[in-house]
Image 1 (tube, rainbow, N blue to C red):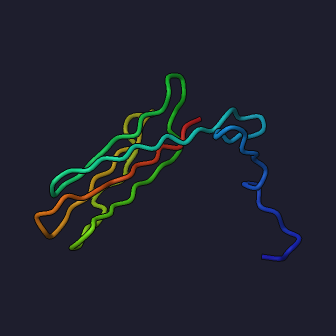
Image 2: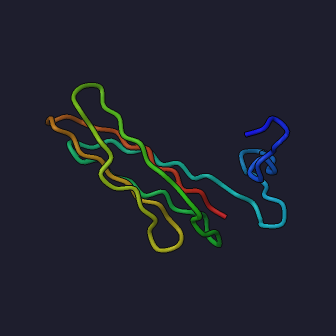
Amino acid sequence: MPPSHKPDWHGGQCQSGSWKNAGKGDIEIVKVTASKFRWPGATATCPMGKKVIGGGAECSSGIGFIWLVRSIPVNNNAWYGYCDTTEHIIGKITVHAICQ
Protein backbone atom coordinates (compact mmCIF):
# COMPACT_ATOMS: atom_id res chain seq x y z
CA MET A 1 0.00 0.00 0.00
CA PRO A 2 1.47 3.40 -0.93
CA PRO A 3 2.32 5.62 2.09
CA SER A 4 -0.14 8.30 0.96
CA HIS A 5 -3.10 5.88 0.95
CA LYS A 6 -5.29 6.09 4.05
CA PRO A 7 -7.93 3.30 4.26
CA ASP A 8 -11.51 4.23 5.20
CA TRP A 9 -11.28 2.50 8.58
CA HIS A 10 -8.86 5.19 9.79
CA GLY A 11 -11.74 7.68 9.86
CA GLY A 12 -13.07 6.82 13.35
CA GLN A 13 -12.12 8.46 16.61
CA CYS A 14 -12.10 6.78 20.02
CA GLN A 15 -13.83 8.85 22.68
CA SER A 16 -14.31 7.44 26.20
CA GLY A 17 -14.07 3.80 25.06
CA SER A 18 -16.61 4.12 22.21
CA TRP A 19 -15.55 4.47 18.60
CA LYS A 20 -17.34 7.18 16.66
CA ASN A 21 -18.10 6.28 13.06
CA ALA A 22 -19.03 9.42 11.14
CA GLY A 23 -22.67 9.28 10.06
CA LYS A 24 -23.26 5.68 11.13
CA GLY A 25 -23.59 5.92 14.93
CA ASP A 26 -21.37 4.95 17.83
CA ILE A 27 -19.48 1.66 17.80
CA GLU A 28 -19.08 -0.09 21.14
CA ILE A 29 -17.05 -3.21 21.92
CA VAL A 30 -18.49 -5.51 24.58
CA LYS A 31 -16.04 -7.95 26.21
CA VAL A 32 -16.98 -11.02 28.29
CA THR A 33 -14.56 -13.49 29.90
CA ALA A 34 -15.40 -16.90 31.38
CA SER A 35 -13.51 -19.90 32.77
CA LYS A 36 -14.79 -23.46 32.83
CA PHE A 37 -13.60 -27.04 33.05
CA ARG A 38 -12.88 -28.49 29.58
CA TRP A 39 -15.36 -26.50 27.38
CA PRO A 40 -15.45 -22.79 28.27
CA GLY A 41 -18.05 -20.73 26.41
CA ALA A 42 -19.45 -17.21 26.66
CA THR A 43 -21.78 -14.74 24.95
CA ALA A 44 -21.09 -11.01 24.62
CA THR A 45 -24.40 -9.16 24.23
CA CYS A 46 -24.80 -5.69 22.75
CA PRO A 47 -26.55 -2.98 24.78
CA MET A 48 -30.26 -2.46 24.13
CA GLY A 49 -30.88 -0.82 20.77
CA LYS A 50 -27.54 -1.84 19.21
CA LYS A 51 -26.87 -4.63 16.73
CA VAL A 52 -23.81 -6.83 16.45
CA ILE A 53 -21.73 -5.94 13.36
CA GLY A 54 -18.78 -8.22 14.13
CA GLY A 55 -16.97 -10.05 16.85
CA GLY A 56 -14.48 -12.70 17.79
CA ALA A 57 -13.18 -14.94 20.54
CA GLU A 58 -9.90 -16.21 21.96
CA CYS A 59 -9.02 -19.15 24.20
CA SER A 60 -6.23 -19.62 26.72
CA SER A 61 -5.07 -22.08 29.36
CA GLY A 62 -2.09 -22.37 31.65
CA ILE A 63 -1.18 -25.86 30.44
CA GLY A 64 -2.10 -28.28 27.67
CA PHE A 65 -3.71 -27.46 24.35
CA ILE A 66 -6.85 -25.38 23.85
CA TRP A 67 -8.48 -24.22 20.64
CA LEU A 68 -11.43 -22.15 19.47
CA VAL A 69 -14.29 -24.36 18.25
CA ARG A 70 -16.91 -21.75 17.45
CA SER A 71 -17.10 -17.96 17.09
CA ILE A 72 -20.43 -16.84 15.62
CA PRO A 73 -23.06 -14.07 15.74
CA VAL A 74 -26.23 -14.83 17.72
CA ASN A 75 -29.45 -13.37 16.39
CA ASN A 76 -28.57 -9.76 15.60
CA ASN A 77 -27.40 -8.56 19.01
CA ALA A 78 -24.68 -10.87 20.39
CA TRP A 79 -21.51 -12.88 19.66
CA TYR A 80 -20.89 -16.41 21.01
CA GLY A 81 -17.71 -18.45 21.28
CA TYR A 82 -16.55 -21.67 22.88
CA CYS A 83 -13.32 -23.63 23.21
CA ASP A 84 -12.21 -27.23 23.73
CA THR A 85 -9.14 -28.75 25.37
CA THR A 86 -7.33 -32.07 25.04
CA GLU A 87 -6.75 -32.23 28.77
CA HIS A 88 -8.99 -32.20 31.80
CA ILE A 89 -8.16 -28.60 32.64
CA ILE A 90 -9.89 -25.28 33.19
CA GLY A 91 -9.82 -23.12 30.07
CA LYS A 92 -10.55 -19.43 29.65
CA ILE A 93 -12.42 -17.70 26.82
CA THR A 94 -12.76 -14.02 25.99
CA VAL A 95 -15.53 -13.02 23.57
CA HIS A 96 -15.85 -9.60 21.91
CA ALA A 97 -18.99 -8.22 20.26
CA ILE A 98 -18.66 -5.16 18.04
CA CYS A 99 -21.96 -3.30 18.38
CA GLN A 100 -23.49 -0.38 16.52
